[in-house]
Length: 190
Image 1: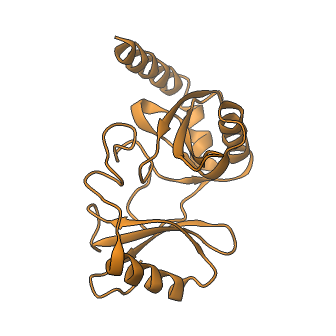
Image 2 (image 1 turned 45 degrees about the vertical axis):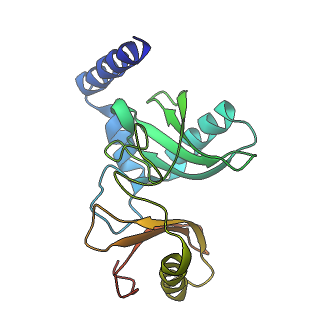
């Protein structure tokens, strides 16, 4: 019942935003920079004032967390979301509305965004994606780090929605959040 009310409320809010000229959506698009080389336009990395407001909302909701990245869009029509690591190491996603109010905190088992299910039933990655382990993980991460020296690997997993079988989410040495795709021959493809 509560989920139905939330969905209805978010739908009404989304329609209201569209009725007002979509200013919330337009603002997110104006302030967003896509730092991944994938076909996920709704997964745009936020920057500037919008990113700062989303980050502040997430930290107000989960004090002591570290914000890993902020992105436009989200599940059930959410305007924005922030991927965080709590002080005890849990990966979570904070949903933020167009007024920069944190509305919910959910487990982040992988990639973020409205179409990837981390806001609904995922077991470790996007739809059907799983965390890599062992030799495969080592080889994928070695290829990624050879391409992006000094980067920090956030997670490495299978890639079920692209042309490459593996992906690694990283933070580059200059702070960019990237999703790097790796071929079955362990070469970075994008």
